[in-house]
Image (cartoon, rainbow, N blue to C red; front, side, top):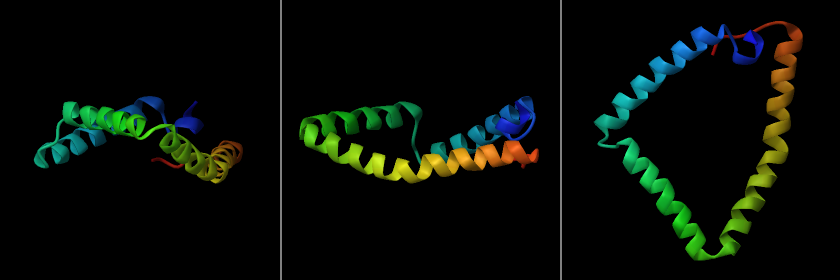
Length: 90
């Protein structure tokens, strides 16, 4: 489990909490809040839907094109990290 998380799960969780607080402070300084971000994502989805399914197909094509490269590299990197027994913190 530690090799997948990149360290002890509790320590990784603690790091994520601290980073989340720091990012939250930065976003608050930029006058952004969680509701506005969620609303923006929802509005984006509505606009994409309003543009029609051609836009969805366009996004899906680019996603699949990128995923063909990104996901195997990520998986190989995780498997090599687990296989080598080494775990970098991060």
